[in-house]
Image 1 (spheres, helix red, strand yellow):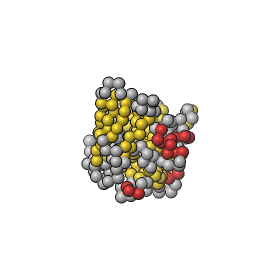
Image 2 (image 1 turned 180 degrees about the vertical axis):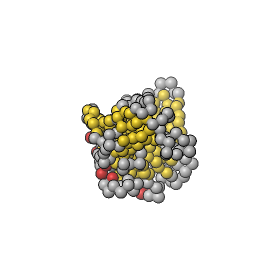
Image 3 (image 1 turned 135 degrees about the horizontal axis):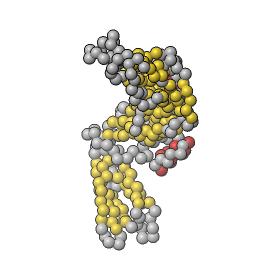
Image 4 (image 1 turned 90 degrees about the vertical axis):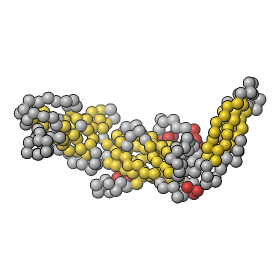
Length: 281
């Protein structure tokens, strides 16, 4: 059990949690107090009431200079688990802040200007509350949601195929000059090509591909040709100069059939016509 103190409480204050009758605790909340536009440090001390041993750490309080949105991926699948996004904040020297707990952010979905003329791309994405999901966020996020505030962590879910941009800015007026962070997200159907393994063909032989999609755990066939998707052959030339007069294989779009024309290797990919990335290969 420890007694807690801060050498500069005007920089970083201590709030003891679950204090017992000996006026000590194993937990404490450190809160930044300084609002000066400079880097300040306070030493946090925790003294063991039984042994007198003192633990210490430095609490560095600084000003946010830049923010970014980070995630494990930029691709979401329809009717799949939500994607968690988090804000990373940096000081003027590029150091990353350890926590942004309690700082309010405004998250908004924007139209993607690179979405090839699709007018309602902002409707492809939805911001979820953690209370609407099975995810368990940090306790401060739940407290902020209860007062209709957003923190540094949010969940997003795909509503329909396309792409959207998500923007986040700090609500605190002190940081009005910090540029908002943006990220572009792709919402895709869970698409499979069948067969999904390497195919070895003799010259003149053919293989027919099927396009399948997974929804609610069920696999269904997608009719090809499609308004949304298109099969393409890549690296399909035998000539080192890339002369298309020497193709390795040919693709019949009407039947999704690939026929081998000469020795070599080519890749078949499935492109989404409205999104500039490949959905499956």
